[in-house]
Image 1 (cartoon, rainbow, N blue to C red):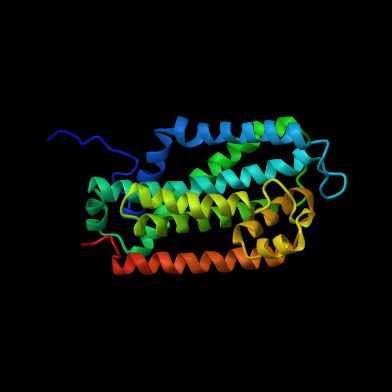
Image 2: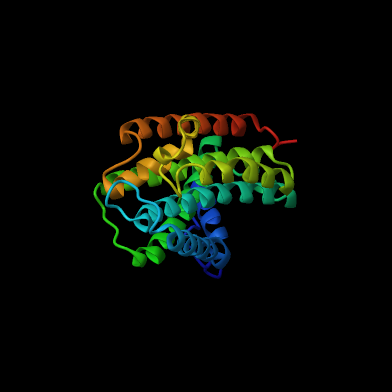
Length: 262
């Protein structure tokens, strides 16, 4: 009897196999899923950094370009973590191959963890790529590296779970695009990526405090400069609470089979 060709995941658990599948899915088209977002972030930096460098001052002696880079890193991380889970689910639903994942001996918790962890991998890879591509433009400090890691991981998990919810809810690409264009994009763009909220009128400062994405970016930026618009501990509490909320909703939707099992 011939010997079967072994694979690293031949004896993997369902969770490991699904996680591997999701990571491999985005990595096989990395020119689109990784390189394109990095290029977009570089263009943002070149345009905004060049135009506003001499006109916008934040946190005292910190240059605007230095201030902008962590915001672009986090914005790219958030958007790509969301895109990974949401696009994977909607594509599987439309093509009809989601049934093969649902028939596998996977609990809804394993399903959730595999998709969210894969989204975190993509978000962190893109975020790291953006940082490596932009850090040459100016001097960047690392005042509190642990805060950078904590907010990076937790924020990627939040958007991975949120993408799971969007992918479960959406039945076609148009619905998913609406969710991304009318919620994810405005929330990230208006979260302090390009400015400190202290430069805004009082009413807009108050509105910004209702945006959970603001706390992700502000806490992440604190890790670089040691200064922030609000306390990093308060930001951590908000982001952690938001993750628990979206995780509970996503796991509940998976457990009930909402729009997954017809």
